View 1: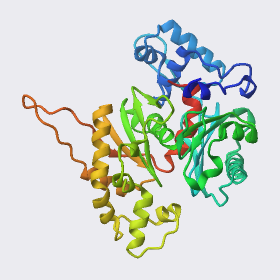
View 2 (view 1 turned 135 degrees about the horizontal axis):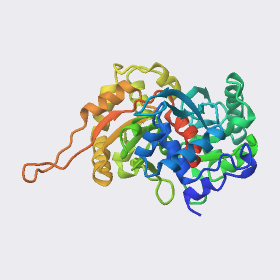
View 3 (view 1 turned 180 degrees about the horizontal axis):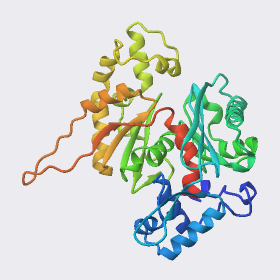
Length: 387
């Protein structure tokens, strides 16, 4: 069974809110995806933006209205005849939770069906044992459910993004040493049984790239690379609107481009924390460091000089292999620092007939908050409702 099949196989009828209401045909997903990208849209414009006939669009929209996934908006006049009603996603139709498991903290989000994040909250991970992680996640979801009065019948599932790489055996992950209790175990099954909800699992880079795809730069760009900065360095690839995970789920592990001393000095936020501490600060963990971060601190420029050649190597490799429209710098990196990294990127290419090969633009992520938790929440929706 492939990586994708493992996650899709967990959509079990006993989890669905009624008899198959959440099972979508491909054409229904096409229509829902078009509507998702617009605040409100007419059936005529849905037809124009898809390869479906007007009759098919009308039938699909009627069914989704009846099943409670869409609602009618304002009336508009389009040509001759009676005004028609615009259609939009019903935000409260279903909800998902997104969880980001980091070495030092856990973030949780709650997303409604329109893709809006109702809340994003981060708590310290004081107990990294398996029971400690499960309890932290359960408590965090419980708080989010209670504060937003989320009913059982509207919960579709939980997406989880975890730092680490997939081992090639089912969805088992090999995380950094602080999370050794989660290594080589079926964390999605364990967590699903613990929460009594279906769980979609991904690594943090893929989940963050999915967030960008669903609610960030993906609304403008179809193909991009996403570099995820945290304690380590990873990322994700989006091609033609879909996250490309590779044969084992590890596409986007950009640190693997480097070796030897280059790997040791890869551009991570952990290396930045250590460099800043060398210049007089005393931050003991990333969460504390990032809450107080100032791009003008002593040590930041030194970090920039240290990682510059490694960062440029990753940018060059990503550009050559993927040919992205844009490269996005995200993860836990502060936007002020991401902007400085964008400024140091240089592309060099030999001109042929006076023309150079096209290169991507490099931009900071526009997503505020934990992109992994946001992308994790979007994962169940993407797998079942949207393209």
